[in-house]
Image (cartoon, rainbow, N blue to C red; front, side, top):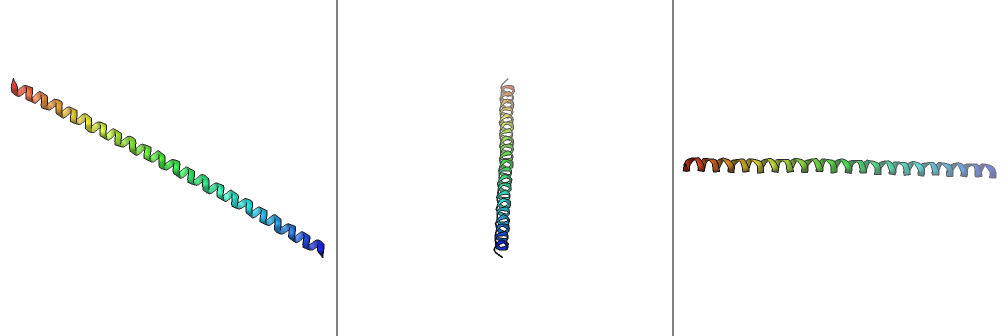
Length: 79
């Protein structure tokens, strides 16, 4: 009878260990997913910043062109 109890106890301990290992694996998977999400968010932010910078550059170029045109018009009117 004692042997049976020992066996049962061992089985329970084995099961507990397995569950703990599974939990640890789940935790690691969750962490990996969070990291991947963060990386994706950072990439998106980087892309948005690049787009904003490009837009700003375009606007600056347009303004410069307008100024050039205005100068030319003034010069033309003066002559």
